[in-house]
Length: 107
Image (cartoon, rainbow, N blue to C red):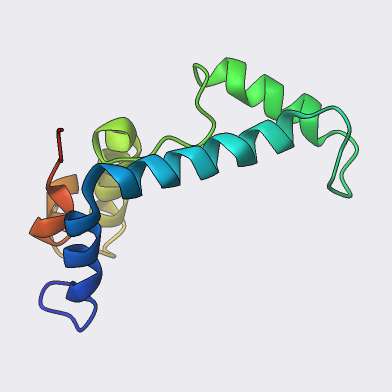
């Protein structure tokens, strides 16, 4: 990923800062609200029940955003890919992403 032609996306994300993150989080909130609604909009009748169980099991956030919020998952994936010979070395989650994506914006 480093030095790829998609680096402009990182700049766009950083330049938009908190408003862009707020919009993404609001979209996520609305999506989860729809999934948890007992009046299903999806062709899976047990989806709302399953989603509520997952919400309770995972501490309230079905789809956590961010490296820190998913650190345990990233670390386990890094370990498995190294152990299985997919990765040539054991990496840290911070090494998976371009450096600009790790920037936090506080207003």
